Image (tube, rainbow, N blue to C red):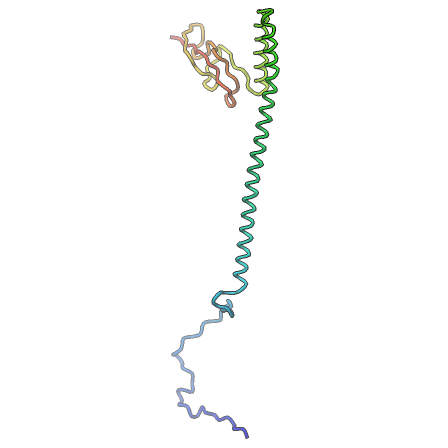
Length: 193
């Protein structure tokens, strides 16, 4: 026969029957964070894998961006080389008639010496025209005000008839504007005493 449970609370002293009032700290309120899981030493199992996957994806995107940038740099360098070559070819082709005319002038030099001077002048004019088509106009004007962006002073002359600080003589013509200049014109500048 089973033995009925006995009430033992009567056997305890009265202070032991009631819970202690100030001996234990109050329990903390329940937090919304989940406590340590079954594998508390390594953290949640899925989080580390997620971080590794995210890191691998970012690293892959970074490497692809570097490769794209390198390909863009190489393509730009190839296009730049191709454009340089094309520009050199256009410039050389523009000067071919100048060379042809020089050869014709040299071929006629023995027969008529006066024709050679006219031929060389024509070739010079043709070369100046080629430079103008390329965007480099010739500057060989006298009597214009001195401009340091277009002129290079190689001498100063006293000329009572000329305005001071004007170009008296052009020794070597210049080509191009101030922004795009092949060379400045070598000039002498007038001054008064």
